[in-house]
Structures are given as structure tokens and as C-alpha cells.
Length: 498
Ligand SMILES: Cc1cc2nc3c(=O)[nH]c(=O)nc-3n(C[C@H](O)[C@H](O)[C@H](O)COP(=O)(O)OP(=O)(O)OC[C@H]3O[C@@H](n4cnc5c(N)ncnc54)[C@H](O)[C@@H]3O)c2cc1C
Image 1: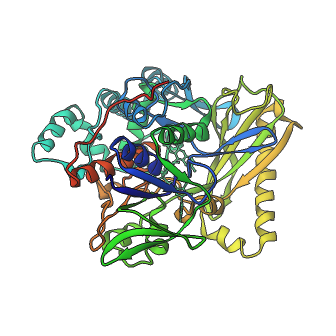
Image 2: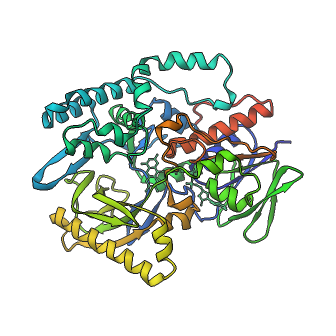
Image 3: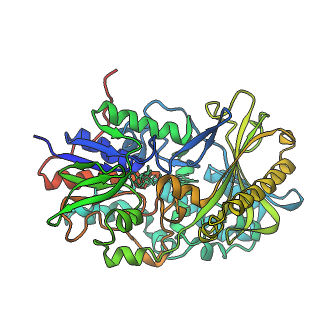
């Protein structure tokens, strides 16, 4: 009889683990507290508009790429139209100044050099490194826990072309590296790609994926993407129970044996995988009993979050850039975080998200978490702050997009508390930790000492977070489980008949 696996959470990590578990013939049931799949990979409907809540770029959208193969394994991107954009981000400053972050590295290099010839050495280094990264696939398919002695030398050989860049770029943060730019506008433009605390290597690999046309946007957006994995999992015979929040993990004699749901029901399994937020898993579901020093220490690292204002505009903005960073005249402090830019995403390109002739715009501002928590003690102050932010964003958007003036018919504000409320994510930190360069190859063990039959996966376990990382942890945990059960891990693309 096959073992039963219980998975907590139908985010991308949980769904990925579910698909791999089914493909390896385990009986599986996922318990999800919400009524839909995806977790942080989501979108929501308002007045016919689909407000996109996650994917800005998805690594793995180019057919045949490493991550594309891995997405196909979990039923995603099998026949999905992908949108790639020539200009990934356009930074607009005062007096009509602008910088375009082109996806194509050759074009990006010429453009940056034209804007700032004095920055040639740093532009050449970034572009050179990104080109080198664009030609190498990191060996990520196999769980590190299962590495054999001969895997490491093989890995070194594969990474050889990157050695000249790895040493330097993995040891310096984005903010520190970008100080090398003489032109402050270029520095700011590249700085818009990710928070300054990340290692520079992350920014370079993003440019490499964009250049490879392997970091696009799937038609149907985040919720469509999550649903495609959910449907595949169900077709493989997996079960999901929605509106079934887990209250506690049941432990008997040092072994995880099941879960207690919010309604008090007990469910039992041979293996329990928590794909829910790591902080929530430890501090709520396991009552802090299995915390390791590494996990406690990790929660001292920085995280980041933001406020998203989504706008339904009764105008077609397809001629406008896909992604903009608008320089603010005055710095804007939101939830204790200072913003110099307003990031605006224009989804006019995907007809599945907009009513005909209309456009979804979303605007994002970095924000702290604690300030919102304090505000939420008084719901009217919390609402007022949201309204104030929405009004200011509306003003800025109407200044920038003439066609939107007087045509914004729907407004929605998500704060860091919203992310936490819907997914239990720690402090609204939807990208996990910002792992500083000195931490190197940082990750959290998927197993816990003193707790047999339990595994933890998801964005916190394998930084850098994001959808590919979450999906990988679902694959890796099943490799580990299969190894333990002395089964050969079944992998590779697999299309369901019909
Ligand atoms: C605004 C925004 C932009 C982003 N942009 C990108 C991007 O461009 N590219 C990219 O790759 N990534 C992006 N991300 C990050 C990405 O969405 C996350 O890293 C990833 O989705 C995390 O997946 P996960 O499965 O680890 O966790 P989650 O998505 O948090 O899934 C956990 C699941 O567990 C459920 N759950 C929690 N507690 C319980 C419980 N007690 N019982 C039952 N169920 C429970 C939750 O409801 C949720 O469904 C973005 C995220 C946001 C919010």
C-alpha cells in the first residue's frame, strides 16, 4: 500500500510537491486555508478587472530552458502564450530623462553607454557577466542533500565559465556594487530591479534570464499559472481540500503523524510536508518546539514588502510601457520605508486580465510591516491611510497617463497585512529573506532534528525566493522522500493524455 502524504498549503511549493508525489505514486492530500490555489502567486477580480498580484517576471518561460522543463514537469507552461517585452523596465526622471532596461543585453549596453560613456567599465562588467550567465545552466535539478562526492567536481566544471565573475559578484550587494556608477540615474535605474541588500549576482542572473527570453509573463497571469499546476495535480489523482486551514501538526513519539484542522478534525498521514510559511509552521503549527538555531538566526535577516495599489482604467493603455519607475519629486515614506520611485505595471498586453478596451495598472511602493500593524489596531486609521495612499497614486498616475485622466473606475489597495492575512506569510515578506552576500549559499534544512516524518518546503527554505525556488523545493523534497523509501525518483516531462 502506498504511503499517504499530507501537504499543508496549496502555494506553488505545495502544488509542486503534490505533483511530484503523485508522479511517484504516493497518495496525497493538500490542505489549504483559502478557497483557491497559488498562495502568494495570485490575482483578484474587481468589477471585471483581474488585478495581478504577483508575477513581474517568471524564470523558465523559454521553451527548452532548464526551468521551463521543470515547470512542464508540474504541468505549467505546457501550452501557454508568453509575453516578452523589448523594454523590461523604463525609468522616468525629471525633464523627460529616461533609462530603458532592454531585455537584449547588446541593446542595453549600447543604450547605457550612450547615456553615460564614463561608466563604460562598470557597464561592460555587468553586461559581460550577464552574457556569461546566460550561457550556463545552474545544476539545480537535484536536491543538495542528495549530492554524491562526484557531483561537486561536476558542478565546478559546469560553473567554470562563471568563475571570473562569481567571486566578485556574489560577495558584493547590489547597493554597494551600483555605487561604481558615476551617473546617478543609471545607478538608480539598475537599482530598481531589486532591493539593494541582495548579492549583485542575483541582478546579473535576472538580466541573463531576460536576455535569454526566459523571464516572461504567462498569459492569464499568476492565478492562471497556479491553476494550471492545480489542474495537473488533480488530473494526476491528487486531492485538495480548500477552506481547510491547519491549526496544528500532530506529533506522536517524535514523529509527525497528522494535522488538526481549524474545525477540529484530525487527519492522519505517513509523511507531513509543510508548504506553509516557515515562521507560521514553526511558531504556530509546531508551537515553537522544533526551532533550530539556524531558523531562529535566519529570522533576524532582512525582508521586504510593499503596498500595491491596483487601478481599473477605462482606457486602452497598450501603447504605454509595460513597466515604469516614475521618479517622485519628493521622497514618499510608506509604512516607514522611503520611496524615491513609484513602480507602475501596465497589463494592457494581456487581454485575459482586462475588460475589452480597458486596462489594469498596478502601482507598488516599498513599505515596512510594523507601522501597518499599529495602524490596524484602529480600523478607521488603517482605512484612512490606505485611502490616502490610493489618492496620491491616482494623482501620479493621472499626471503620467493622459488617457487615464478621469477614467479610473476601480481602485484596490493591498498592504503588507493583506499578504499576511491571505497566506500567513511572515511580515508580508513575499520574497522571503534578503540574504546578504556574506551568507553565501544559504538555505534551511528541509528536515528537523527530533521530528521524524516531517518536511518543510517553500520560499524560505531555499533563497532566493520566488516561484522557481518554491517549485524546486517541492521537487527536491520528493527526491529526498523517494531516496529514503528506496524508490527511483520519476522525473522528466509528462503530458497527461487528452
Ligand atoms: C507582489 C509580489 C510580486 C512577486 N513577484 C514575483 C516575480 O515576479 N517572480 C517570482 O518568481 N516570484 C514573485 N513573487 C514571489 C512569489 O510569489 C513567492 O516567492 C512564492 O509564491 C512563494 O510560494 P510558496 O509556495 O513558498 O509560499 P506561499 O505562496 O505563501 O504558499 C503557502 C500556502 O500555504 C497556505 N497556508 C498558510 N498557512 C496555512 C495553514 N495553517 N493551513 C493551510 N494552509 C495554509 C497559504 O494560504 C498559501 O496558499 C512575488 C510575490 C508578490 C506578492
